[in-house]
Image (cartoon, rainbow over all chains, first blue to last red; front, side, top):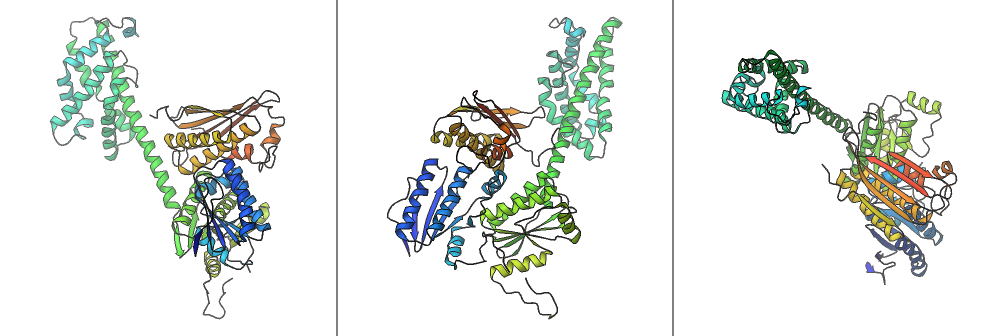
Length: 139
Length: 299
Length: 147
């Protein structure tokens, strides 16, 4: 099922293709330029490969500032335009607390506790009320 | 102060006191060993008390040698701080008030003073007065050092207890696979709010919880600060991929929230912890059926 | 108790590579001074925001880190970001959320202020900008202010 995608999308950012989903793993301290390149390359890769979803694993990221927060939000918005869904997985508690204190709640972003949970979320039909992260009124 | 005017010359009262302390080290320690402060703390043997007394006499002599009889930060005191703290703590444990410990420390002066007066027989009354004054200043400083040390111990104890109280006050309970709850009790200040948030979010990670319930049944009032804190916790949990439900909103609190015009906006609320649990189980795909036909079903 | 080494530093902010050094240094200094994980993260994030401001709006500058202590013996980390750029014309507006002149989400200055204990800006049009922030290692739990 798992197959290494042809090439890494950006310098330090490995991207794996798992079936219908691209798995992006962010690690450590990201350069602004690396984040920018990832954003550009992901769009192209999605358009080319036609995958239905992107999972961005940020469990190895120690800080998310407003720049990286904006990049994540924009990746999500872009993939949406390409008829794919993005889930950000594994945000650390300290990072989440800081982002909220910073004033960035990223309301449009789909989130999941782990990459596994993100994969499950993407496996569900598009209209679902069972997402942990999505803000939808349930009956 | 006379000792400063002629600092360095061996004849100053300070140096006379220093020489006296070195000369009479054994006798002073012997007399102190009979005082309650030493006798009741060093109970193994009298020798132990005498040895402890000698250490204190040495410290005093060192401070006098440095011409710093009035300075509680003098280097000479460093070595006896821990011992003084232990003695003070032992007396406190025995039920003595701070004032009583302080007067026990004050009681160390008379026996030494008597020795000094006997030693200086034949000196002029003025010289005698200068030396006894210096000695009492020195022992007063010792008392200050001991009390300082004792107070910082008390402060450390208060800090520890406050921390324990925080931990006790915010237990995280696993209600189901993937569901954790924190019952909040008492008022939420900003220090506690951050603690609660951290505790809950760490539990979300540790327990792989997709749902976290914040139960505020035990919170007496909800003002805009508490509401803001609840919304921040909900937002942070959502960023991590978990959903946070606030339960235990009593009618009076619901009224206050509406009355104050507080916007809980995106926060999912339920009246009781049971309702919140029912909601989370339903979302997880579990089917909750009430067997009594008239009972409230799940929502 | 803590040595100045590892905390005190003066770092240039000239490129986005420098932002990485700033973040790494603040992380290390905050850890050395005994900040908890959440407070470390807040400080590093604030430093990242302010350093990016220095780079983007100030045309580059520097950060100085210093270990400070209250009379009560509480340790703190003070970070000073300075540039000799165009300065801030309307400080109140620059500190309000949603205001941006540099293509971010407008969280830079106002957001960073919420992540630290003390915050001061010194700026005038044409004379550059200095932002000084300080956070204190909270004895758990944080002691009451003013004690």
